[in-house]
Image: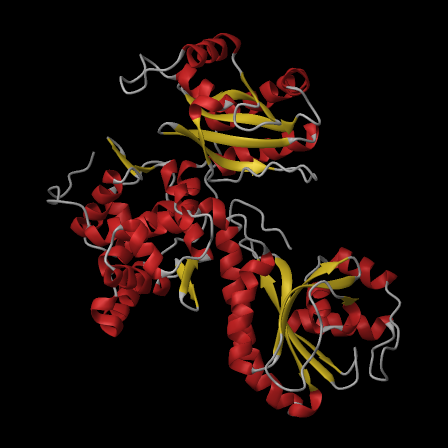
Length: 531
């Protein structure tokens, strides 16, 4: 291992206390907490909680709604750092998704985490009787199928602090002998699961792949009979992927060292004692693991964060003290416990939940109504909306469907389709004259959609309804795909087209960029439901 600076005298206090606050917000039954409540639960002084909250809000990990605090989508990057550095979702996730399609049952990947089992990915099936396990959730190892597999795969005796029970010992022995484990309603009545181990090139159990179902569909025995052959084939394919992994997919570094350092310095200068720079730097170190596969060297983490080696090392040792990092001969390895910092809660967010706070901010700036919509067949469907504050405003509700050809958001979404699909969609649409200004020929519509795609924004003037003007831009996911559109709608008589475009397009694009960034963070390893 590379030579490092001497171990600091103690952990970084602001980082320890800041992560305490994040854990409380992540674990509570309600997503929002008042700072006074956080002070009571954590035992911290109210002034300390206020400084932590100020820092975490400014670095994009928390957001404030009135007097309450909640996790911001940017906090998902903390869990993403672990998932990217371990490589398991990227390597094995497609195999799990394929198995879920074959069996028509939910399939998950899980790893050991202390005395528990932490879920990494989940390919769920939509059912009325849903299984609510989420990536990042922790289950007690003694009561789930994957836990028996991990216990069976460990070398040596159990730790002295883990005396076991006869029933648990029997389950572990059976898992070792049979090569799989079954959960027959041990976690919850009605839930059954079967899991098999996935081993790395050295023969050690890396993770478990499991199939979960409900007793309304399967007994434990019938699920075992149905799923086990396919599970074993999938585990073998996963082990081949681990033995010969492709080059890691390239992702932008989460931090640009000079920009990150300059931003922290500017925030410290702006907020003074209200900004905890050591907390912000510690989170930067944690996020930096997301640009590296496997153990990370101190030198690389310091370079990515723009921090002196001694500063980065002190954060690392604090994270090790808290159980988020393990120090190995090859460097520092991020551990699955990082997922407890809100990942399960954040990966359950839908597009409307992600977009609405940004729409509120946008409407506060421009005083006009704003919406987000997705393409649904040949229509658009509104999934989020915030009304403007004017006496005369556009009155459209969430769930409303409108013809894509006559709306600015529809033209943005049609313009983002691949060329062949766009041509097919436009070819089957028969435009109708909703107003005297509606484009009603296919040639006019094709020209308008092409122009929308080329200029990067949609503009519709009195085509859907007399007096209605609408401006829209695309919203993208982490892969750059257009998944939605965001618009501003207003009365056409309020300003000239040139004035509306000049005033409204910049803030609309800023809002789309913020929504897109949040979608990229939340949806990097877990798909975001459109609502």
